[in-house]
Image 1: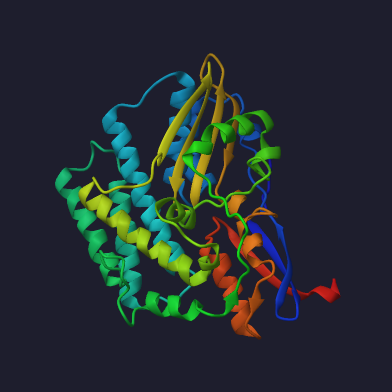
Image 2: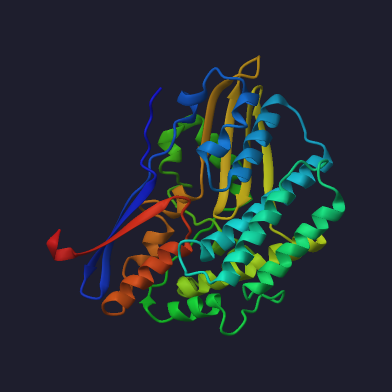
Length: 362
């Protein structure tokens, strides 16, 4: 079977003077997992997933394993559950740092080495739980903490003055003034059962353009912040979102170090939906990821669907569009850079193109 996918989001911003009149999003295309894997043993898919999902591949593997176990009526051992939580947290931290630095901001030699150190240590934490001695795991966590400190992020979530991150945050202020979103909504674990039921019932028709009772909630770092504290929709600009991401990096470091710090509910959750039917949700860097599977009596794939955070945040009526429409930009390149910074702060799991056009030239 020869399949090609358009792995990029196209965003067109229509301007009326300095105001954004409209935003059009053409989403990426996604792999049809049921067509690819129907009839194959569920166990045979695990090594394939990292090739399909290069970003957040650990989260996809954990989601798939948890969904399959639920479909089979199995429960993972407590040690396995704890290990899966650790590897998801470690990958989330790595992906948050990747979004802050790689491909977006210039890295000097010291920062580049620190990002590599976090990735290497996270890979060690992601190994089989029985294969890595506890002493090496402690060393890996210490390596992560040291590297994050080198990048200018302290345990109290403060940014080191003069760091590349501090300069990036300061550079985002004041160049994009958005209108308040009337009633912002955020995805939570309480929505899981509604979503996975729709996912299995409607397949790609739902996962390509999901909704919850007509609403398109936001998921990801800003949504998690909204669950922890009261936030205003007027504060949801690029700088605030960068600060939220940086604060979460510090929070995840603390959890990896101590293991008892509070994190959000339902980081890894699984649901048995009937004989041979199961689903799982994983709270990864960009938001809540869903897998849903149906297996036959011999544990072969009958149906396999997934829903990634990007489909919510970059929905044609989603949170990014809601924030941008009606926003006022600074003149020229600074205003366009502010829009690009806001799009980047949503951190899509694929590349994006951004085009600005005058509304009168449609």
